[in-house]
Amino acid sequence: MSMDATLRDRLRALRVFGGELPRFDTDATPAAPLPLLVDWLNEALDAGVSQPHAMSLATTGADGIPDNRTLLLKDVDAEAVWFASLSSGPKGREIAANPHAALLLYWREQGRQVRIVGRVEEGPREVSEADFLARSPNARASAIAGEQSEPVVDRDARVEAAREKIAAEPEYVPAEWVAYRVIPDSVEFWQAERERDQVRLRYLRDAATGGWSRDILWP
Image (cartoon, rainbow, N blue to C red; front, side):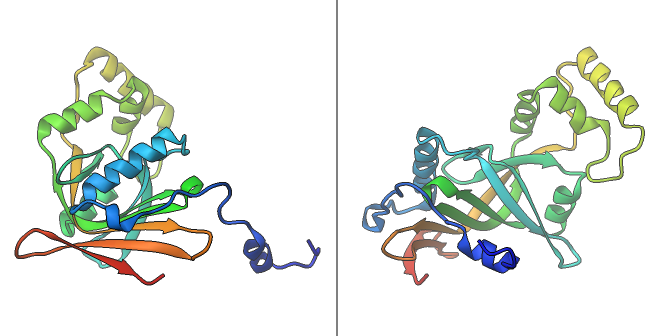
C-alpha cells in the first residue's frame, strides 16, 4: 500500500467478510421474529462466533440525546430480549425517562446482524436477583463498589469494601440491579451475500392485533 494512502483508502481496502457465509431462506422463516433470533443465536454459538452475545444498546434520555454502549445479551424468551444493569446508572435513568431502546447484534464471521427496536420494562425481581447472583464475586463487588459511570474515587478501598460485603453476605443483591426486557415492535434480520449486497427481512408488529408482518427490504 502507498505510504501516502489516506485513512479512507486504508479502510476502503479492508476485506469485509471472509470465509463461507450462511444462506438466508426468507421463505422458510417463522411467523414471529424471536424464534428466528434464537435459531440465529444457536447457529452463531455452534459456529464458534466470537462473543455472539455482545449486543449494542441505544437509549435516549429526557434531553433527547442518544446514547449507546455494548453489553451482554442475557436471554431470549417468547416475548422479549433480556439484558441487566443498574437502574441508578445512565442506562437505567435514560430508560426511566424514555422506556424504548434499540438493540444490535452483529456476527462478523457469518455476515449477520439483527436490529431490534421496542419498549423496555423491568422483569420480575426474582430474575434480577438470580442474574446478579450468577455473576462472579469480583463482578458483583465491582457492580456495587462505586456509582456507575461516575469518576473513580478511592477505587482500591471501595472495591475491597465491596468484596468484604459480598463475602459476608453472599446472597446480597442491590435493589438497583435490574433485569430488563425489551419487547420488540420491529426486528430486522440482515444477511450479507457474495452475489448480492445483502438480504434484509423486517418484522413489524401490528399495534392493534399484536401480530407480525414481514417485508423484504432494499439494501
